[in-house]
Image 1 (cartoon, rainbow, N blue to C red):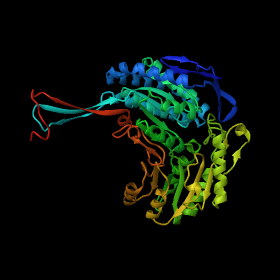
Image 2 (cartoon, rainbow, N blue to C red; image 1 turned 90 degrees about the horizontal axis):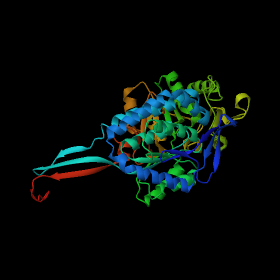
Image 3 (cartoon, rainbow, N blue to C red; image 1 turned 180 degrees about the vertical axis):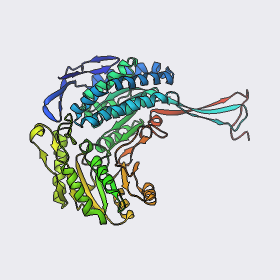
Image 4 (cartoon, rainbow, N blue to C red; image 1 turned 90 degrees about the vertical axis):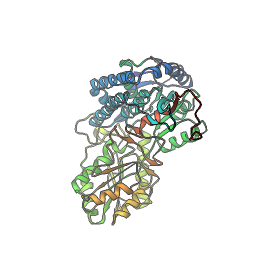
Length: 496
């Protein structure tokens, strides 16, 4: 079944003004056309931004608890449709069905969480240094927020941006990845069914270099949130810095797991398998480097090789599948290129390294789970984000050596350590230079009630998700109010 996907502008599902469309196929079977999608251009973006600007005053004026009630209904609708949407995520993006359902669950969780924030949009009330005067800070929305989202979490990440933006009182224009347009449309449909007023949520599609850049630099946009590649994010920084426009970036990672000599090896093995090969390695938090203590290196490498070779590769909708396809031909070729680079650099290919073109994999973008051993820290496969099922295994002798190598990359998103020592874990927690640190767990598995974001080239601006310092601090800005009810001129600092 081919879905007909349209723009959502001003409360209506409409075709692109140009009438142009593009097709999106199933990455597990390129013969399966998932959707025919409106190809938005500047005219469509103009209409979407105009609709969002027109809707902003009334949406801002609606009390935040009322906005929260609508988000709660979004969560309820997504919960009712979880199975249907999970299947759509898997068909359009490729991840295995359990992960597709988890993707939708994260969107549900975010809708519920931010619904509650409608009654907790705190500022501060503090004493004044002068009599008959009070002081407070309150949150105000920016206005129109442009939201640019990737394909690897096509329900969760748009929800991570939509829900906090809306609860703070912004209106939005969402431009999802062209690789997962149907998922974005299905998510926005839940907002429509929940009763979101016309123009508060708008949706357009198209290439990032054209539709996306025009949207984020549009004079009618007040803030921008982007999740995607470092190259694209850093280009947006250069464009928007000149406009003094608030920008939140969540970009790449080169995440690492440290396996100490006192680690639970079975637990560590499971964490590496999940972190390296879950979502076919297509996560910004994927475990693409594993540092193993010298005393365990050979033993752990053999365990990892056997386990990875036993993973079932195939379409995500097949119940037995452990690892699904890559998203498209371009990503497939990028991963295969990095595998060749690893071999040319002198790393030892332990298992995998090949495209799979047999059986159920014959029409998709499948790469076998790949392990490189004897990797040196400055090799490209240990420094650059691959975004595929490829993991580099390195050895170390001391904790300080391991931490230094983990930190010696341009990225700083996620890291993990497996150890039985509370003192070792405390030192790692303190010294690892990443926005997320996991103890005896993999590098993936963030929860929505805490901020999500990286250091260095992994991100800038406020992090995603909840908690203090998270998305609410990006989608709102603080206004300070001083009220003097003394009836006379008081001069702060001078009248002391």
